Image (cartoon, rainbow, N blue to C red; front, side, top):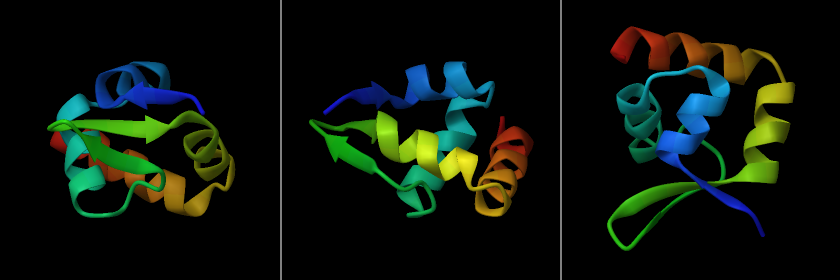
Length: 67
C-alpha cells in the first residue's frame, strides 16, 4: 500500500494543499485517511479518482479556489 501525504498529493496534482486538505476533511477525497494527526491519501485510489473525470474536475476546481 502506497500512501502520499496531502502535501505530496497536492504537488503531484498541481493543486493547493489547503484546498486538498479541506476536501479530505469534507470526505470528498477518496482514499484519504488521517493518521497521527496528518492526512494521507492512498496513491492508487487517488489515481483512479482523477482518471474518472467529473468528480475529479469538481475537486480540482474547489481545491484551486481554496489555494
